[in-house]
Structures are given as structure tokens and as C-alpha cells.
Image 1 (cartoon, rainbow, N blue to C red):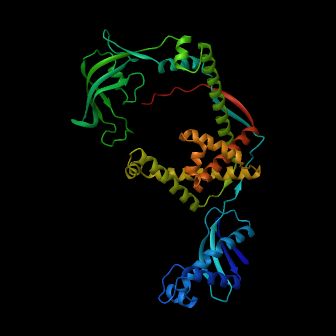
Image 2: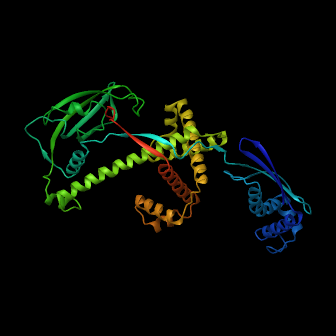
Length: 440
């Protein structure tokens, strides 16, 4: 087989290959015989019609296409191997010449992986910011555990405070109209952990049972309902109940009843160990991110627009599925975002492609391999997330090539990040967390 390669543009190449006449003729005859087995031709049993009759019945072009489909897997693979192409798309046939008794000539185009100019990726000195140790982390965690097992008592002799849970009726109006979905009876709200509009929960503090009153709030400018964005609203409130949280007494008996531990000391030791593991995990993730950012900044790659367009389409499909799951309208979302959405998603696509190409380049440089044990470990992790056994997970998804490819890529990504972490010098710098506004 003879092949010629031409660079079309960017990472698009065109290959023309010549298939010997004998092999082309054999493939053509086999294709005609195969087609004859699936069509009805008057006067002939299936599979018994002569080639000339089959040609008149279905047309020569259809037989040629069938013949090419049988030849191409072998010859395309040979052509790609011969020219050492790292392809990223399925080959697309752009032209062919196929005459009986003559060499067949097929031309196809395929995109190859863009070349990455890799910056330094090992032996670097990298400063990594990590949050300063929280002296109150242990007390917060212990209090959180107690709060999970708290009981609630009705309050009858005082107004509500910011740590109470209240039960109330409400009805909201905006610009003189009732707010759709803005009314409820006997709604329960933890005043210390409210997800209502800013200012709502705060105005429920200081009232007694059976009080009826109005509160005034303003919807945020980024509120999801266009009619309510930035608009003032009034909510009529009737306070039905006030409940105060009562934490259990911390002793061995309580610990045995509410956890897998036998004593308070065992529980405290586990909390301290958990806090330590969380901190080490944060340190490692921050280090990996900082190292990879340094590599990204020092590397370069020309990404063809065709790759970005495909990634944009893939990202949009992800967003659509996520929004459909959440009951949101995709078209309305895109319109609300304006032109910034398209430019933002295009930038995200380019960033994802560059990251992927650099990871792939490093994995080849350091000869990272995906072993069977890696698959088994990853499947066990994923099975736990899905609530399935590993065998059941494989049974449900194992025949999906995209699923297996995704797992393989995840394994490579993790191995590359571990390699980078182990082969660079990290200096941790503690920083105090900035004051942040509470999100509601």
C-alpha cells in the first residue's frame, strides 16, 4: 500500500492511500455477495444472484461503499501507523476512486493532537498558600456533632432569638401582587442557618408566639426570577412556634448510643484525626494546583478552533443536562447571561483542552501506565459513590466505551498530579482567611 500525507492546516492532515487492485476487487466481490444475502431479487434465492444482477438492482456505488467499509479499518490503521499520527478524531473520507480491475485510491482527513511545548515540570520550587490553622476547629467539630443529636423544646416565655428555630405562616407581595411560591403555612426555619433572602431571618428575631407583623426585604440583583430582581417586597408573618435547641450531655453513655465509639476520649481522638487528615488533604490539593498552574503558565500549545468548538458543544450539553435535572430552562438561562456566556464558555473550553493536552504530554514523558489494579481501585471508589458493588457497576456501564475512557483518563490525571507533587519542592505559606460576607 502506498500513502502520501499532506498538511492541510493547523493540525488537520490529508492522507491519500492506494489499495492494490486485487484486494480491491476481492473486497468488491465479497461486498456484492454479502448484499445479495439481504435483498430480494425476482428469480433468485437470497445470496444466489450473479454480481451483475446485484449491481443493476442496488447500484455499483453501494457495493463500492460496502467494499470500502470492509477495507478501511485495516488500511486506515496502517496509514496512521506508518506516518506516526496521534489522531484525535475519526478519519473522514473526502474522496475515492474505485474501478474494477484497478488500484483503489482513497483520500481521508483526520485531526492530530496539537504539539505541546512543555515548560519545566519537575524540580521546581513552588510556594503554596494554605489557610492558617483554626484554633477553634476542634470545638466547632465537636459542637457540630452534638448539634446533630440535639433535641428541641418549645419556648413559651420569651421572644425568639437568632439561635432559635421558628414555625410561622407567611405571605409575600411585590409591587402590590402576590409572589408566586411566596406563601406557606407552618414553615420551619432555623434562624441561625437561613437560606432565605438577606434580611428575612433577622427580622423574625425578637417576636413572641402569636405575633403578627410585616417584614420588608429587597430581592438580590442576581435573583433567578427576572420579575423580582432588585425589587422590594413585603412579607406578612404570623409566628406560631419558637423552639430552642438543647444539646445532649457529652458523656460515655451518649457517645455509645450515638456513634461507633465507646468513650468520649475515643470520639475526641477521632475528631482530631479527621481535622488533621482534612488539613493534609487541603495542603496536597493546593500544592497540586499551584504546581500545575506553574506548568500551565510556562507551557504553550496552539489549539485549533475546531477543537474548541467541539469542547464548547460538549460543555453546553453538560450544562443542558444539569439544568434539565434541576428543572431550569436552558434557553432562558442563555438569554439572561448575554454575550458573556459564549465568550466565557469558549475560554473554559480552551482551558480544559490545554490542561488535558499538557497532562497527556507529561504522562507520555514520564511513561505513566494504567494498570488493571488502578481500574479495580477506581471502580471500587465509584461503586461506593453510586451505592453499587464494583461488579454491578461494571455490568451497568462496562460496555460503554466513553465510560471506560473516562475512568482511564481520571486515573492518568491522578497519577500525573501525584507525580508532580512528589517531584517538586513545595514550601507552604500559611495565610489568614479574609473576612467574607455570608451567602444566603
